[in-house]
Image (cartoon, rainbow, N blue to C red):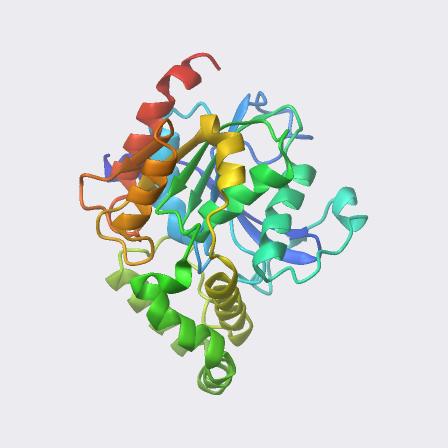
Length: 325
């Protein structure tokens, strides 16, 4: 895709209060409010991206732009950050809705269960009930997506894509065997180290470190989370990671069976979080499902260099559905 075209695609940043947690949402397209904005016609469908961990929406902006362009700019593409992973800048207004003010506080909102409820709460308060949804979950976002379907079966989802899905045996995976002791046994050491290193660090130095790191990883854009080295955010990333290792163990075959007709699984051949054997197992157990093995050597972190390829796959498989919208 032409880089100039990507730059022309409008992306709007908001911070909203969702079940008590300030939440960054990046919105691709002219639609910023489905309920009160009358300046543009309300679309019939929303493409909703749920990140992996760390749950920084800014890491998925090129992917969202590719999806928006490939769908001929007909449908909004929104990305939600995980609760507690991105803090609003001091000069940024945090939007509130009357529904959220009355919403029940989510227990352990920064943990695995809380993050699932956080996404459902956002959809309840910011998306009309009759609006069709395409959910795209990456990594642990795939687990969230599957559990959202299980908890709210009547969610108007026409398709859900689970990309590099960490939905089982996380601690047994090659990366999990390394991450589990760090995130579960030495979590407080990580917290203390992060606090001692970055709390006294001047903002300019932290911003420089982040910008350079994101440039190296090809992840820098106008919405790069320049506060991702905040001890509060780092602690929440590690806390969620620790729960992933302990709780994402057994594949939820009941939920998969119930929603199989809506699901597309996309596994990588070079993924140390969900190795090829996980693909082979689920393919054997659900032979009738849309369960794919990537043939393009796309890695787990596809959003670094393979946004276009992943967006091509998704939109190509949605063509028939979108043509009827």
